[in-house]
Image (cartoon, rainbow, N blue to C red; front, side, top):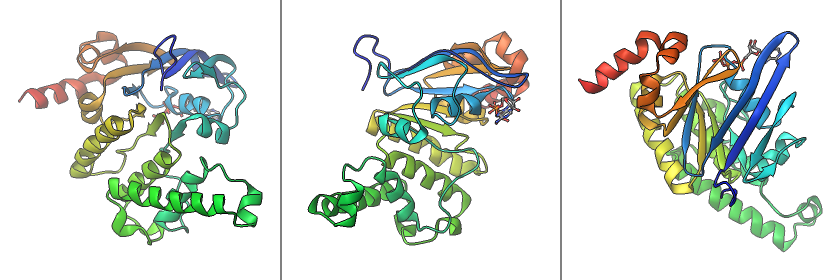
Length: 269
Ligand code: ATP
């Protein structure tokens, strides 16, 4: 699962991206081990989503490099990056609304199928076997994400929290090594967020995933992250464990302010 030389799953070095005069990313370097959950936090406009977009090939960075298990990802298209092992969810949910829940997950499975277009046309044995396996895998994922009862419903008929979990199921169907979650708790209530905590930790354990998490819910971030990477104006300003970040004056000034002290107080109460 990792680069045998460095023991790193993801290594990002010097990533830089500008939009006209806006420096959205400035010399960003970050690494993640397999089985590690790193949160990426920072104020609005800090560059978090741009970072995800550069990792997943939606944007080409101006400078810098991204390696997954020691392999450079330069110039790969988003679909190729999915195939090498990076999957993501989106801040604004992007499901296939008119497909059913199970069909949405099957779309994710097809990213890793071996059979060709010709196999599909002639319905070869290989194609049929793979389709069966994909179906079985999709149902298992729905069960894991507590969505089995909705398998035949249209994706857009699901409550918001279920749609967010469906996006995670679809991402997992591509068999990623690294999962990028963009604000998975946005729009969820307290109990839904608490369930999400547990789910993310369970998935990390079970699949040995590296996870990079963008999230504004600091309680969630502090509870489940192994490390936290803080961005401000396109650059990294601090990295450390939740307790190190909570005590970091630079971070408090740039972003966390009183919010974090309140959370810490609540946890200690
Ligand atoms: P938020 O927490 O609000 O989602 P963010 O940390 O994800 O913010 P980004 O969305 O990455 O921040 O934006 C970083 C900067 O880059 C912002 O100034 C934004 O306006 C700019 N930006 C992002 N994408 C584009 C684009 N496609 N074209 C022009 N500017 C962009």
